[in-house]
Image 1 (tube, one colour):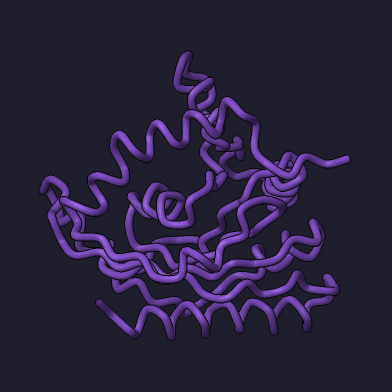
Image 2 (tube, rainbow, N blue to C red):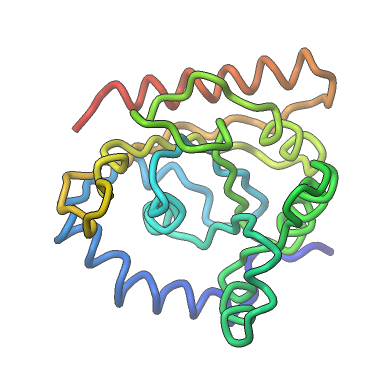
Length: 211
């Protein structure tokens, strides 16, 4: 029987980090607003997809959905003592630079099978304005293979946090969470494209609501 929640130690670390650092920063420094948190399933497999405009997005997204979210990270970071253990507790999984997409796919599915919510930025790379213009099929494929529902999340304003050569700026941040989208029932390209475009449309619509 597959676990429905993350390891207990990981949950403790998540809540400790969230309430001591991330949540205070989001609500006070960034004047954060979160809409739709009640739509997040509390346990079970979940692929969380979002737009991406800042290095702070993974922490802010996980804080907003009220449960740990595992993201992929460069394998080199897992060679650093202490950091390696901390990243694993926080749900990160290693991906080799230049490795095939198959390796990343397997790692993401393993994470879901262990009871984690797994995060994927729909466009892969960061955008300058937070909009999704070129969504990739990876998140839909992961969801289809793992039979996991998809949760679309929009992060608004995060592209302004870091200006070149500056410290993080106290800009307003708004996070909007959409309705859960059922797991794709096929890994065929047509199905994946349909689900991917639906996710992009939902996220962009939420993003367009602004503050």
